[in-house]
Amino acid sequence: MTRILPDAPWRHRSGLSGLLAALDADQGRARYVGGAVRDGLLGLPVNDLDIATSLMPQDVVDRLKAAGIKAVPTGIEHGTITAVLPDGPVEITTLRRDVSTDGRRATIAYTDDWQQDAARRDFTFNALYADPLTGAISDYFGGVADLDARHLRFIGDASARIAEDHLRILRYFRFLARYGDNEVDASAYDACVAAANSLMALSRERIADELLKLLVVRDPVPALRLMVDGGIWLPVLPEITHEGIDRLAKLIARENEANMAPSALRRLAALVPADAALADQIGARLKLSNKARKRLITALETASAPEGPRALAHRVGVEGAIDRILLDPAASLSALVPLDGWTPPSLPIGGGALIARGLQPGPDVARALQEVQKSWVAEDFPDADRVGEIADQIVSKFQRTRQ
Image (cartoon, rainbow, N blue to C red; front, side, top):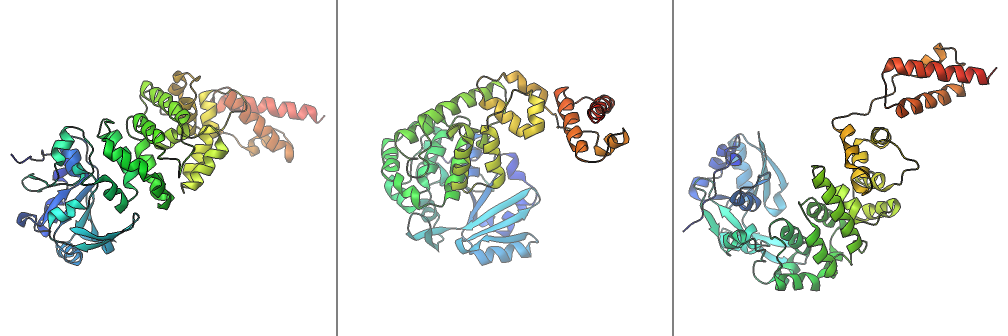
């Protein structure tokens, strides 16, 4: 019996019916593929929508333009066109087969054979296609049964699939954590372990992307332990150890207790050694953005003195304060409450107001303003009237020292 993709809101996105008509979906020339089919069968939210087609890339571009749909050649050299629809982009890729691979990139040729296209994909439940009109599933390698059983299986020989694209080692553990209930296929695991050194050939950006996607899975800890046991990270991130995974497990427990959404960067801060300088080096190695590296540093820096949650948030930002509190097992989760929906205010007074109170222009103004701010923060950001009283006291003190 043919499995049918359940109806879901994403199948009714604005502009999608016109796109499918332009691609002759009613004639079998276009099917949903990959994550949308996999997650749709599981009843999970679908964010990214991909379509496979037997039409050639330039034909896709021409058809979209004729239908009044914006077409962006985001990966036309690989057969991919992005259709810009009101509810979000849709990637459309011509059916392909691999001509040659070197573990980092593939030379492809176009085909009209759906099974050839499926055969070049990584895991059986990522090679599922669905007729966009009837929902009928095309399953060439037993992906539906594997999905039902939460069994993660490479298409064909695991070592051969990994040799085609070394990134599949990391993808294996990410999908294991998200879909496979961490039940390991021995041959797949052994193939990943044997090929771990090939990760050194990958760009650090691709490695970082997979690591961050793994970390944001509900519970990546079992998969990460398998990776450390197998020496998967040693060639590229030897800093990831069981000690770091233990810290991550504690963080995840605190996130869950506080009902906080997972953050890949916060979890990375737990996973790497608790050393801000080393974390920055790791961030640089992974080619993370300056903003991401700054967040790692902020999360792992040691406070010079105790301070309240809002004072901390005023100094390092709310995001940074939340990271610090969650990463510190000794910190009470109640410290998160004052930060809920709170935006750090700006000091409601400036140097001019101090001069107007009789303070002589010069270096004293900046120093006095710092004292005003220090008292304002210590009193948990009182209103402008109280700040005025604090300013009067500080100005009076400075005037007395100058007499």
